[in-house]
Each structure stands twice: as structure tokens, then as C-alpha cells.
Amino acid sequence: MNHGIFITGTDTGVGKTLITAALALHLKKRGLTVGVMKPIETGISPSREARSDAARLRSIIDSDEPLGAIRPYAFELPVAPLTAAQQEGQPINLETIKKVYRLLSNRYDAMVVEGVGGVRVPITPKIGVTDLIRTLRLPVVVVGRSGLGGINHALLTVEALQRQKIRIIALVLNRTHPIRSAIAHIQERSTLEILRKQSGVPVLGPLPYEPGMPTRFRPAVQQLARSAAITKLAQLMTRSVRQTR
Image 1 (tube, rainbow, N blue to C red):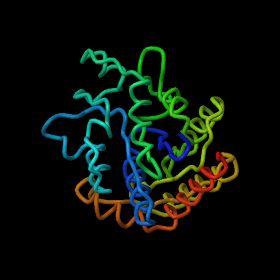
Image 2: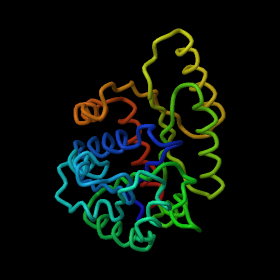
Image 3: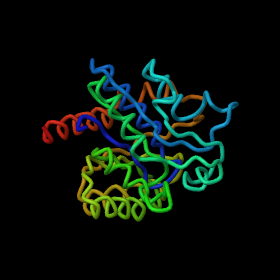
Image 4: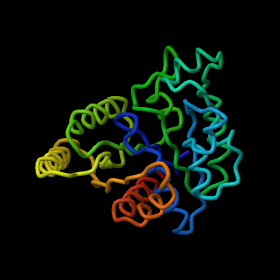
């Protein structure tokens, strides 16, 4: 299980699905067969299914895998997975996710897996997202905010992963809000400079702000898949896979 990558975030809403989809599409356009997973997703109702993260990932690479394989655990409540699983009486089993991942990974050249929330989000009363990453034995890409507040969240996430001896391929910074003032530009530049010096991992971005999400998801992903940042991320992923063989 060493030809995949796990996309996590410093927080919810930082752009994990956008970057997961863009990387998967980029790899596919390079001629690789690509599988995607969103093992756990909350806030899923029948009326929102088509706009779920898992459905978008499946659609963007024209996958014919059943949604139940791409996303083994789906919960209707828009809360942390631990709470959602408890409320619906459906405990999350990491071994189930691992078995599904193995089945999918045997079919594809590369796997791109999107996490849920940040790395310290609990999945059961005793395990969290870091345990899921370790179970799948995947290197990680961290997605964070490029603006004010991004430094602390990114450094804490990197530290938490390094403490667990989880390999980090890159930190990708995303613009979650438009940059409309000189102060915002200074704040973003400060975030980039400090993280490049102190994170100890490659820092990519900032990715451009994408207005109108999620209605513009497909064109936004298609454009981002051609960007220098995603190209570099794919190169780092390829290098990481070679180093583990």
C-alpha cells in the first residue's frame, strides 16, 4: 500500500476536496489509472448526495466504482464522525476501510484519499484521523489556509503528524477568501515566508481563490489540475512512491 497519498487539512473547509480532485485528475491526464476514496463523510442526505465530496471525486475522474467503495461510511448528521456514528448506531471500523482501500489500490496505478476534518478529529472514542492514516500507511499532503491564522494551524498539524512519524509530502496553502487589500497581501506573504522557514516540509501555493464554489467545482478543478502547484505536488508524490520501493 505505497502508491497512494492521503489529503488532510488544518481545518474543515480549507479546500481538501478541491485539491484531492485536482491531483487525481492531473494524474489521470498523465496517463495513470487513478482511484479515489473519501472513507468517511458526514452531512450526507439523499437530496445532497450528488454534491457530496465522494460523488464529486467519483465524477471528476469518471470512475465507475460504486459510491459505497469510494466512501464506506456516510452519515447524515453534519457533525464530527464520532458523534455522527454514535447517533446513527454505525461504528466506524478502520479494518473495513483498510480492506476496501486494498481492493481499490490493486486496480490502480495511484490512489488519492481524502480525509475528514483535521488530523486530530476523533473517529471512535479511542482513535482518530492519524490512526486512519497510519492504518493505510500513506504519506500525507496537508492543505491549509494562506491567510491570517494559517501559520498556527499548519505548524500544529505538521507537528502532530511528525510526532506520529507520518511522512509529509507537502503543505499546500489555499486562498479560502479573496485578497482585496494591501494588508491581506502582507498577511499572506508573511504566512508563506514563515511556513517555508519553520514547517520543515515543501510549501506549495498559494492556490488562487475560487469564487462560486461549489457550483463551479468541475471547471475549478480542471483549471487547478493544470497549475504549477498541482504539477509540483504530483512530482513530489511520484518521488515519494519511488523512495518507498
